Amino acid sequence: MAERIITVSQLSEYVGSILTADPILKRLNVKGEVSNCTYHSNGNIYFTLKDDAAAIKCIAFYDIAQNFDVQIEDGMSAVIKGHIIHNKKDGSYSIAIKEIEIEGAGKLYEKTELLKKKLFEEGLFDSSHKKQIPTNVTKIGVVTSKTGAVIRDIINVSSRRNKNIEIVLSPAKVQGVGAEQELINALKLLIEYKDIDVIIIARGGGSYEDLNAFNGENLARELFACPFPTISAIGHEVDFTIADFVCDLRAPTPSAAAELAVTDMEVVLKAIERSQQRIQYSALKIIEGLDKHIDASIAKIHYYKPYSVLVREEQKVNKLISGLNKAASTYIKEKDMQYSSLEGKLQALSPLGVLGRGYSIVKDENTGALITSVKQVKTSVQVLMQDGIINADVKNVRINEGN
Image 1: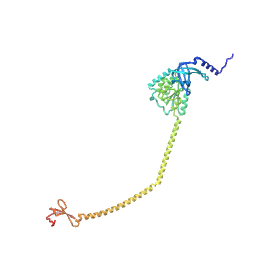
Image 2: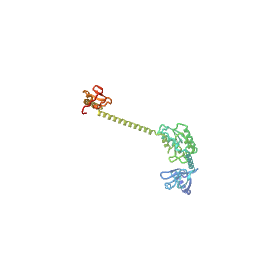
Image 3: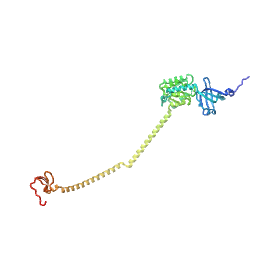
Image 4: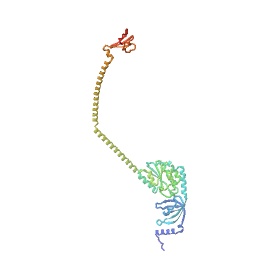
């Protein structure tokens, strides 16, 4: 008897019918730890529920999820109620959630939070310890897996921004047993180079457990002690690890880390070109302004003819000087004539002039007082003549009758 051959679709439908028909799978109460939780733009919530030995995908559709009164996060311990649904397309199955009850943080999450609190209190996250990322990076050290998209993205973005950039890869496991120690060893190897400008520690996205190697205490302390500036680019933009808090700068993606580390030389060259253009434009404007000023000054010189003005002004000054000389000469002549007239009058009125006509002046010889009456005469007098003085003793005084 020939064996019956069925199609993949038929097999998928058969498996689905078994899963959905099982009465136990129709009413499930499952306990586990939430991992890799995603709030989708369509309103659905997707995550993995796991324990130490297994994991299963879960989905809360929009009409159910909008009634949740809790924010579901990785590491939470939860009990979900729901039923199994089967995806015919890829043959997978998952739990469609009807209710969820959060019991608390999962063991791994709780352990990480306790370590984060400890390192925070020790100051490993303080901004005062953060080193500045250099602006002229020429050599980058990268700690990540030697295969995969992360290193390719960093190389592509870095070389596009600066074709002369040098990248040194120090490979390490980024998840699983022994990953933390490999990350530490790779970091130490880069430190020995001495001429590294910045170190990027990176990996692609993954579940909370996948990123656990970057939550290790030893790696955190090694990053804190690193002498070079460090940039973390671990997981997706919404993922945060302890390494992100310790590093000097966090980038949302590996490509973004390369952009933060490497200066875009094309932008720099364009900025330099714009600066040169602005300088040239400013210089031309200054020169044009000076040319206009010079032309205006020359025009004013031609219009006012300063030499002719000076000649005219000199003529005016000479004319004024000549007028002043004539006026002064006339004034002096007039004053000379006035002086001569006054001098003649003074001569006429002066007692000395009277003496010249034969008269004399008599004074008391002792007191020098002018004698105008014989009654004032005492024993001796002075007689002032035109050409001298006579001292005389009085022998006799005669008074005119009637005086």
